[in-house]
Image 1 (cartoon, rainbow, N blue to C red):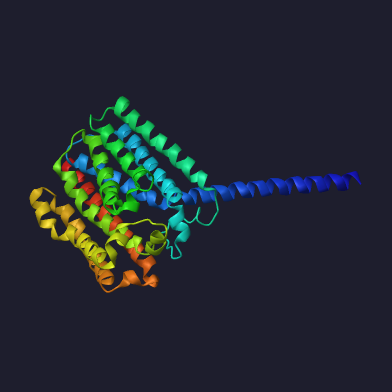
Image 2 (cartoon, helix red, strand yellow):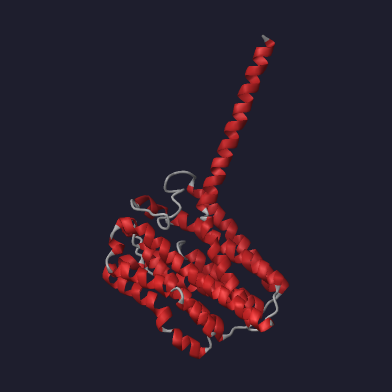
Amino acid sequence: MNDLQNRSTTYRQRHRVSGRTFRVLRVTYYFARLGRPLFLAGGVVFHGLGVLVALYRGATLNVPALIWGQMVVTAVQLMTHYSNDYFDLAADQANQTPTRWSGGSRVLADGRLAPRVALVAAVVLGSVALAASLWLALAIRPGGLALPLLLLALFLAWSYSAPPLQLNARGLGEITGAFLIPGLTVLAGFYLQAGRLEWLPFLAIFPLSCLQLAMLLAINFPDAAGDAAAAKKTLVIRWGPGRTIRLYLAALAAPYVTLPLSVVLGLPGTVALAVLACFPLALWQGRRMARGAWARPAQWNSLGFWSIGLLMCTAVAECLAFLWLCGCVVM
């Protein structure tokens, strides 16, 4: 009898532990999904591009600045992902047409975690980014503009969805994202290595900022109905489909139309050719959008995927071009 009771107790204890472990794993999974880790690769690529431009311009690799700089970039990205889901919760709940690339992570909207979890995570990650920025400026000392650049990036990232500015709800999110995500990230990577500002990183940034703008416009189309219901007035809602499509096509064309001028201003021809190599994908995306793919829900996942793909392919192509040029300089 005692043996049977012992077995029963052991069984209950084992399954209680297993159930607790399962709950912990489930919460961990949804917490990680809330942070949208797939998008962190973009921060690594953009920061790395800035580093490579600096090395091409004669800087010596500063490993501590590289590590701490990437820590700031990743912490700011994660902070933005968690804060966006928290402050955009009403729009995400109203959104009946989310895609893999828009509409948030769906973790809070589907009730998988309490919203407060996202807010606390965002505040903690913002604090980490701030502390790492201060350490960079005061201990590693890459240059006097390091802290202002990083603080500006932190401020704009928080203000994207969070009050009081809520830039994305005021029709300024797309422009802010184009300036912040490739722009300040590449610029910070360059400055933390070179300790100065030059014209070249801006020339490398321009195509990426244009493509980032186009990408943000593309992924905001599926969210338009939910955003409008929650009084979130993105540029897509403020401008309407017609003007937004024209802006999208202009942003898509600008990197290639301006390439000759960029070369004249100092962009290496190898880098220009790397950007140009992605033109067929841009042309295909532009034709799809011009022919009304933005209005067809069946096309939305594909439009988002290839808009992100075009941006990242161009960024990686630039990285490879500068990496090759750095090798040529060494040889």
